[in-house]
Image (cartoon, rainbow, N blue to C red; front, side, top):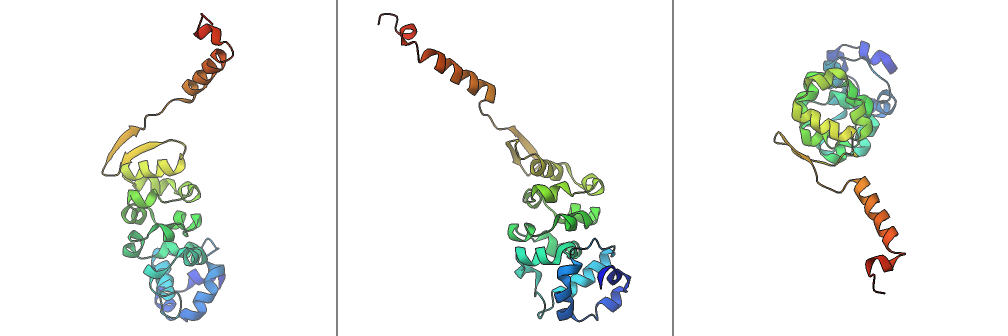
Length: 190
C-alpha cells in the first residue's frame, strides 16, 4: 500500500480487510502519511476490529509503537482517555501529525507531562500555539526536565522548589576541607 493508502476515499477504506490491514500497519505506521484526519480515523477504525487489535482501551505500548503515525487518527474520546502505558508507545512522528485543535482538546496537562522528551520535541508550533498556558507549562517541564518545578495543574505554578544551589554546596565543601587539616584553628588550645 504505502503512501497510496491516502489516495483511497474514506468510504472505501472502511471496506479494507481489517486483518490484512493490521498486518500491513507495521510498515504503514513508519511512513509520514499525508492522510486527512478523516482518513486516519477510518484506518484506526479498521485496527479496532476484534480480529485486528481490538478496542483501543486494551492497547498497550507495543500496539502504539506498531501502528506508529496512525495513532494520530484515534478518535478524540479514545485519545483523551490514554494512560501512561499507551502514551509511552505513541511515536514522536504520530505526535506531530495530530491536528493542533485536536491536540489542545484531547491532551490534558497531566497527559502532556507523561510525554517523553522526544515526543515533546515533536510538538509543532501550530500545536503549541493552540495550547493553554497550563498545557504549555506541562510541555515545558517535559522539554526541560532538569528544572525541578512543582506545578499545580489547576492553573498555578508553585514556583521552583527550594534547595541549596550548587555553588553553595561547593563552597561549603571547600570550607570543610580547609578546616579539617587544621584542627588547631578550631580549637586554639590544643
